[in-house]
Image (cartoon, rainbow, N blue to C red):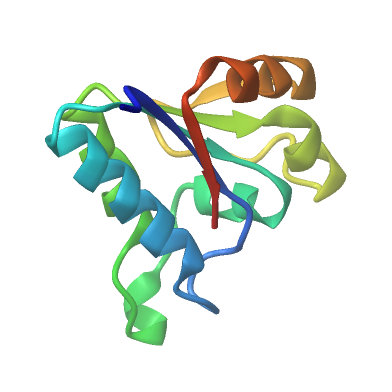
Length: 118
């Protein structure tokens, strides 16, 4: 039986439901006792930017969904190279996020029992 899950969030917030679904899957697995890590990469790094206004588009907050993960000891990471490639290297990110490089991401993939991508 799988004991750990890595959720890769590759989609931007608010245009699709993928990112929100990935964050909620991470929460559901953590609530049920699984060790979970979440990584925002590629266009998923847009979920890491603080100051989002989801009410403007009538969507639930991905920032709130992210910070709720902390209550269940889920580590949430953002890939710094992907932030830089999108001009977000100096952006203020959601409090509590940890920055990792692609090398660390590769290590995370190899150390989790299940890896899923949204």
